Amino acid sequence: MKKCLLFLGLSMAACSPSPTDAEPPQSIAPSVSKERRDELKAVFGKAFAPALADSPSLRKMIKDEALTKFDNDYDVLYHLIKERPLADGQTVRELLLGYFENTEHLSDVERELPLLTIFVPELPHNSFSADSWDTDTQIPVVGITSYKTNDVTLVDAKGEESIIAADLVPGFPVVVIKENERVIPVTNNKPSAMAKGRILQASGSLGFAFLADCFDGSRALDTSAASLTPTPDPKLLDAYNIYHGTDGWHRDYIYYNITPNQPRGPFSYSYQEHIRSFTMVGDPATAFSKIADQTGDPGLVTLGPPVGGWTGGSFEFKVRVLLNAKNGLGQELITYFSAHPSELFSLRYTRFGTSLILYRPHVAGLVTKSLSLPLFAWDLDDYASTIKIEVEEVDITETIVQSESRSVKFATNFGIDTTIGSKVKLGLKFGASLEETRTETTQRTYTLGNDLLGAVIVNFADNVLTGSVPASPSVLWKSREYSTGWYSISVEPKRVQ
Image (tube, rainbow, N blue to C red):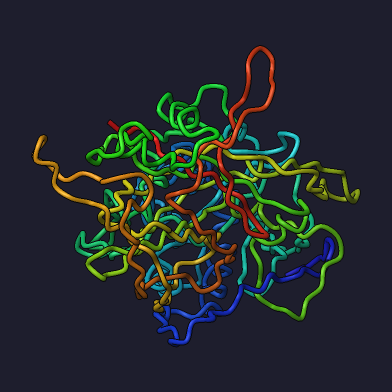
């Protein structure tokens, strides 16, 4: 088998911060090692490349399935299509069996790689994508990802291998063999505690559940809003105007209708906290390097911009909100969102090499992504006056659990208003009584191999809108931003009913 080296560059691994809490984390180990999963992806990719070349029907099925974006990316989950019939009557699995040395090799792949995925990337300058793929004439080579390196091995229909360095992007048809990061395998329709929403049934008892509803391609996503908007919610604008130049809390008015002239009110469930925008911060190339897929090998260094994201499609981000409730039980609220690289970065591509069409990407700038990611309704009678929000970019789904203790404040100025027969908040801020300070313990989970981007603290007392900037024909209103060294988010109450 001939092997040619296109360009062997060195890539830099981003090291995730180590846990700092006193209690040691407990690991949930995967059943199959990364080395074994790499080996199985290579076995599958080497059989899939000639099958894809020989079967226009298989190429069309992969294209059509990718375009459904079942997980809001151009992913095709092997176990969901393996029993699908092709034009000649064979199933996908029956076709592929003819390209394996024996049945056991494919059975090993199916058993040990439940998240095996064929991904159709969007490549620079419209050179290739699921939308533009002419399945009659374009025969992609097959790229195989690895946990050991950001370089990508390519296999063509003849079994010849080549390597694309981590800092290069192809400009010719390629499909990628990888593992899915947006779903979790389940059996007997019983998802794990991590999984959300509907279950996609494969053959036998195997099914797949989504990590979060935002990854379910059948759901409409709310992408409205941004941290800079000409039309903020009227109640947020009223809160700004009421307390502008006056000591008080915007959220007192938003959640309790409390003003300096009306110092008591019941809680309203009409609003809920939302993350409204997300931006990477700092040097654009460094920010991209932080969240682009990394090998985890600290011994490698980089030659040029480290960009490996073309094999993974959109980034997946996990948002963890650490709440503390008055019942003493800390709560961990976990949600997710995805972002295509172009939604976070301004990317430019320059041609590299002559034998094949390759591009070297350059991260030219940062872009703010608008979000409408719901969190919780902030009733101070239930929750502490501060919350902690952590963000990490998701690479794999092996989790560890640990505990964290912190000192938090609870409001005590609540009572029954006999005139309306319900519980109300009594007074602005913490009222005439002193707040209660407790040390609370919260359990949290995070994922091995993910890129941890840090935490921010959001206070109930923080202003929601911080002011406006001139813009034609009116003004743009700015939300309060919360930043770490890697990202910045805005958090606003948003009307939900």
